[in-house]
Amino acid sequence: MTTFKGGAVPRVGITGGIGSGKTMVCRIFQETLGIPVFNADIRAKELINSDPELRRGIVAIFGAQAYDETGQYHRAYVASIAFSQPEKLAALNALVHPAVEKASLEWHMEQIRAGAAYTLKEAALLVESGSHKHLDFMIVVSAPEDVRVQRVMQRDGLSEDQVRSRMRGQLPESEKLALADFVILNDGNHLLLPQIWHIHQQITAKLQS
Ligand code: ATP
Image 1 (spheres, helix red, strand yellow):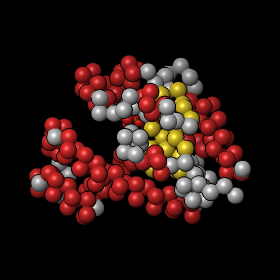
Image 2 (cartoon, helix red, strand yellow; image 1 turned 90 degrees about the vertical axis):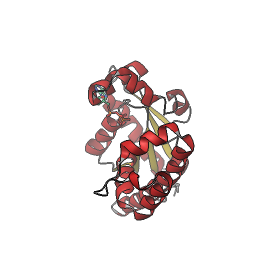
Image 3 (cartoon, rainbow, N blue to C red; image 1 turned 90 degrees about the horizontal axis):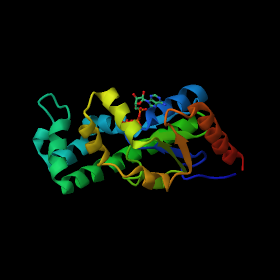
């Protein structure tokens, strides 16, 4: 029987640039095919608030103001410092990424026990964080940059400059595509469901080999 980095069943990563449609694609995997999805960005936000070790580390880097008087993470404050001091951003990432990886692996093991055929880990910075190295396969959701900009402007009510500035914090799509095992083209002209079904078939075929 094939064994995977994720043990008995594969861990599959899903990434793509801002506005590529990762969340939309994951919803289809989850709701249509019953594949469980771990959203690394959501989990990171939860852990930053709830994990005492992470809180201590963040306060050591950014000071007590990193959390407000109610104990909630002061995201805008931390972002304003991290934006201008790259070494602090690197230190923050060095704390958060391993904590999320640990949570994601524990979650994956639970899903195996619950009978999952494989699991999906959705992360905007899957490659940037290095966590793709712990995964068996990587799916990249691809869409032209201008389409992505328009989608995020509409979804988040941001200006074009704001979206493009966020994009500059991510690797170019071409570098992610070079590492992809599977690509989903979500440009608005290609149907998602047949592409997702084809990838699902290829992953499940590997379970039998
Ligand atoms: P982020 O990295 O910012 O979290 P994402 O890659 O998860 O983004 P989504 O949130 O899934 O992207 O999609 C971005 C926006 O574009 C959403 O409002 C979504 O509804 C819309 N969208 C995604 N794909 C399509 C599509 N094929 N047709 C129309 N709208 C789409």
